[in-house]
Image (cartoon, rainbow, N blue to C red; front, top):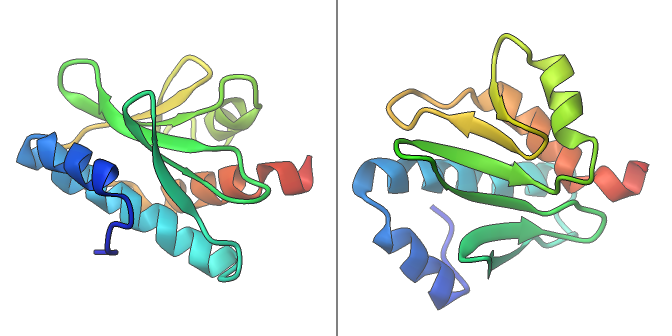
Length: 130
């Protein structure tokens, strides 16, 4: 697990129940790993936006992660992008979506890592391509 540079983000993760915290930390690691694979020089910034862990870098559309509804977790994307619409076309049968803003995940199931890597990469390079 990557060290937290922001104590407020660290504290937010500590407040999640263990099942949700485990999966959200896996998403966090996946975001940083994907960002490093794309460009090690373009540092991902971790902060809180609307009380949710948020990840962005130069050329990126921000990604937020949090619990969703009563018993799920989600990766949230800016609703004025075409990201979720594109993800829905690519992964209609593999991922679950909420409107035009989130990928919804079951914390009791393994994460669909390969699909999420593609979605994360698209978000982290969104403004570089558009």
